[in-house]
Image 1 (spheres, one colour):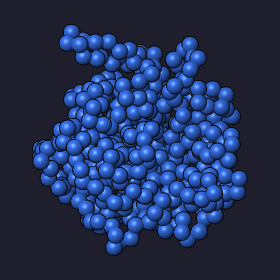
Image 2: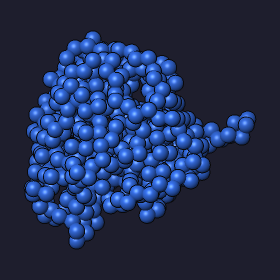
Image 3: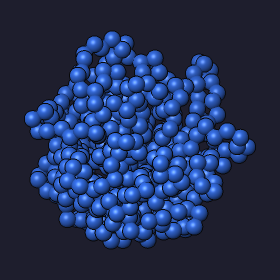
Length: 458
């Protein structure tokens, strides 16, 4: 078993690590009781119509139009336990983070004879991850590294005696993922691993009624294996059930407020529950108390309208975290069309403020921890200084704008999306920050702005 001293020792002893708001260990989240999960057939026949089909991240909702909602959780009451770990301290210590993107999440890589070559297939120079990269990320001041992982290209599929599919993660892939997790974990960093792009293929995960049973089975089997493999890793290791499950290839793919995507979100709720149940069922090591992240439809900030957080049979309070991906505002952060904008101004600020208003209203004020597990701004031809200003303001809001139920300020970890690419600023997706071939930063000023804005120290 790996040993960890310092932070987690202090946490488990109940020591105060960071000056965040305090809430009793047995404080309950305000809930809206549900009457149980709806069946797939009921979901498919739901006829409730919604009128707002705009992409939510592209508009700012006002207090007048925002419907007050209550954070929903599954209805079962579980006996609460207390290990002295306060969620406010935990998320504050996660600090700012960095994504090892376009790496273990790569899929559809034709022509590769060795499955381990997937790791570099989407990166310039087919670069593999090294300890030196991780050490540079830590030296910069990042405290969390998210490692997105696609598993479906790395499983052997067989059937059991009843004809049910059995998904077995191949040892070579699991070992390599574990090796890179260890690069981070051994540096004392927080590490997030997930199921990432397995939702692009209806043979694995897809949010429709006809795929629901199969998807739950796949999620359950993958998380059972991963939780078993990493059981002895302490709370520095965080599991994220899925990434951006959505109706891939349909007009509803990126719009969380259409009738179809709202039905899909209700199905995704069952996927989150399946993942949490599978992790908690591996009753060894730290799996009973591990923090688990659950993501709404397409990773959208606004998926909360149909999102129901899982019941946590582990019994430790506030261990279910909401994971969201507000690249906000879209026209500034990602859009390379004629509608895109490169200048940081008051409108950009207002959109960033709206992100954290929603996070505060819907989750943190109800003692639900939140992690922004992807964010950032693509490199355009004319936005180098503006995107630094945006990053500074975004992080400043993350560490100052949200409060817990006691009214004390809580911090929102923000994990920068880095896909390694700065190749063509006219096509978008230029989220390259770490030059992995040369182990240096493409834009030192940008990552400095992030760390400076949160006042983060190693």
